[in-house]
Length: 138
Ligand SMILES: [Zn+2]
Image (cartoon, rainbow, N blue to C red; front, side):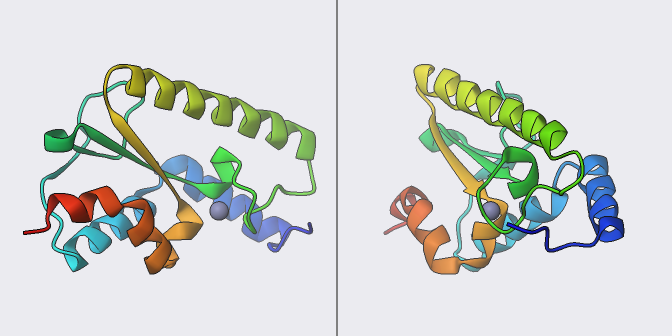
């Protein structure tokens, strides 16, 4: 698949992705929680793997993963230059993500990983976060 961004755009994106730990995905999720009257989430809770959000009452950890860095197979693809370098990096991240999820699950946590590109798909998001809606059903 071809890179949808020009070289200049791509390096600009990398800089942004590097500088802030995907704040925009976190903010979008917060927006989603608010829209759906979901409360009780905590940010920056100290837990193995640093999940973006936790719901302590449900022992639920949510990660919002950037598609590029975490190697999602969507349109946020690998740049043509240094493809090998990026692929290796992404493979490492993917492996680490799996390890983190597994460790947390062993400790009794539920883990949900949301891809950056899924934040736009409200229905899919609702499906993935079904457990949250169950929590708040009266
Ligand atoms: Zn994606």
